Image 1 (cartoon, rainbow, N blue to C red):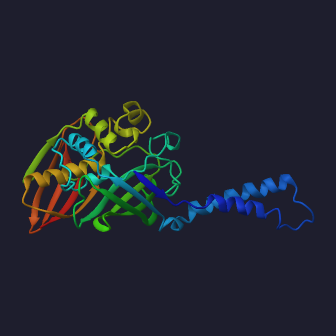
Image 2: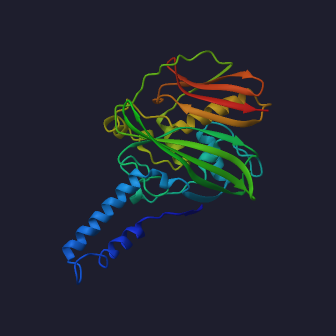
Image 3: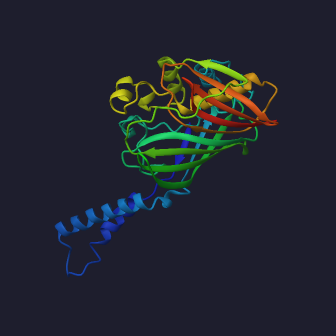
Length: 323
């Protein structure tokens, strides 16, 4: 994979510090201790400005190229307990989440296993990161065995006060292309929340679906999905960390994997339908290894409602459009 990244701001701090040696009220060279103070204050004020003026991050862009390797596609299929398309065939919807990944070096990971913030994504102190949901439009399939490109842009940032503290919402728009043609348009919602006890109880009772696929999220299944998506987030595979540090009763099932299994169950139950759009939203964590069910029902012509149910309540909901 080849990726390019645009990051600005560090050199501007150094230039501002140097400018203090020329712009001051006292004659002669600026004393070293005063210059050090000015530099420290400049860095502090710059960091504060970057943190408070989050709108400056809107428009930041990252481009990643990847070859949709049939060997890797077979690994994705194995982790999702299904068959793999051969070279030249369409990549199933949402499998692109296991591709176009920027591999962060080990020394650039935070305690939670995620890449440290402040590169492409804005800094968010010590808040916990969650993939809260997203919206996708499928224009044409990505083809296995071909090169592809993902162009990612930070399109929105907003901060809100929630019941558990401040929440930072970041929306990233992804455009997936092959041979210059747009294949998938995606809006990804990322939420950063202050450390707090996780909300585990569901409030929405799960109804009966027209189809229902039981899934047992074993620790091996979670590890394999983490591997194919190069996801180092420790809540999915490190039991001591997730229980002792983050306060969950067990390993947490990946939100994107739940969404993928929901759409996979829809496609298996409706093989004559072609997916044109998909949106999903997480409501509460799914905890392994308790079984959950990928369920759904067609609500009207060209539209279906999906949900993931565990122990009688809904953990994730989704909407599908199809033709």
